[in-house]
Length: 288
Image (cartoon, rainbow, N blue to C red):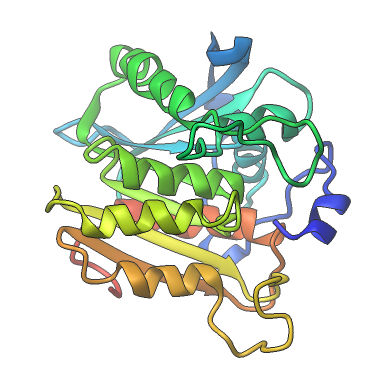
């Protein structure tokens, strides 16, 4: 996230409304709320909602990062058009009244440095990052089994959505945990984190062995500030360039979506509906 946007960030500000055309709505009265403790003593508020009846093979499950804000945007939606099938949404947030926990998410969602050195957040002196692997361990070893014990789920159809640092987490999972998720949605990923770390992870992924079929949806707002090319507005956005770079990787289907005129923050809510709907599409549906 550009520094100017970081300075305006307000964890108590409700997320923007979803654009009506692709909004997904959730009935707040149907939410199940779980409380779990994870790495670094973080307490997670897990909000789970089933939309529609379960398919024969169980619900496809989409994990939503920044769950407090994500679920707030979903429950605020009015007159949303129906989905193509049943889905279980698992919003992974923090036990706080804020929509975002900036300190906890900076640690949980950012990958560790490859050289083993501390991964400090460059925007906030002293704020720790680099805890993505411990957080993914929590999701894989504790949260997923708990969800599967309480709801009928399809273990072959699990996905993850994240925005900004959450987008980094979705990409890090794609690059380093093949098979954990069949669908990854990364909205406005903060690709400059500990540069060139994410380029190195992408390089290793591209050069790796063939893997199981996976889908990646990369998204960004058209009005996001770009520190990499401030004087060339026609230049591809970093996420768009990444989409082109990853196309052709065996087993990976890549889609790119630009939200014209939307800022980095506005892309948070705007990306939710398209991600959920794309997750429920069959792999051959829609643009490549």
